[in-house]
Image (cartoon, helix red, strand yellow):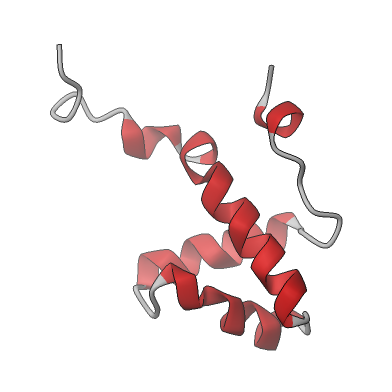
Length: 77
């Protein structure tokens, strides 16, 4: 079962938006709970639409970036 089978991607959400949020996170420009405003401005989304995209991004982040969570130093045996 892949991630899209478990968490429904909002119709408004695009790969470009997810990459934008990844970049925003890496740059440390904002706390990710404030990222919706950036999405609103960049992609002409309503607050509700932006919140849907950010929510999906947060819910799926670890599945889309497993390499960030497979650090042997942090895995307990």
